[in-house]
Image (cartoon, rainbow, N blue to C red):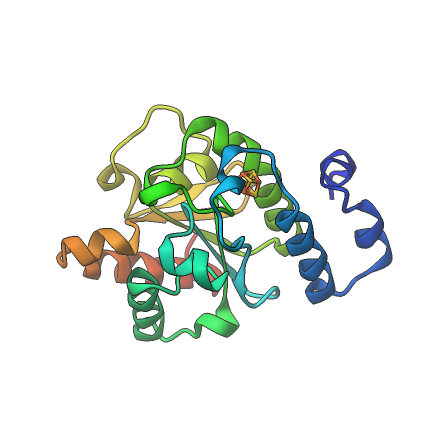
Length: 210
Ligand code: SF4
């Protein structure tokens, strides 16, 4: 674990003292609840830090909380989240056991607009911490902003160029990119492609493909 990153988040003591990942997440959530690093703290109802299992082999990273997530304090609990949960089940996996789910931003952007570069930069230490703590076997990037961040891409490629294969992420962990489930609510043809990518991530997690 990067000690500078931990100190920046004020989490060094808790990590040094605790091997308990649930306890660490309680502390992480407390830190995020105090966060005023960017303008998004002004309008949030609740912070949205994580869901699933802190021991999961697959880490799913979305973009930012929406309205339902902001109200409930959990990622992917609205209509897009329900579709994600359904597709995870169709892939033969369990959301609460096999997935650790989070977003690039921990607070909702107004009217669900896209995350801004300065917001991503301000919020990124939390995600960096989560990736280093969980060390998943594979990261499933849900949407373009998540994919760009996890892959370190600055050339804004379309999702059709990113999905359908396994990438090497900035963390040395394999990564699979796919459409955000909200896009499949607008365009149902994307549903099968997301399922295919979840199955691809499953294959990596099981060591069947790299
Ligand atoms: S989005 Fe992230 S950086 Fe901005 S206030 Fe929320 S937790 Fe802090």
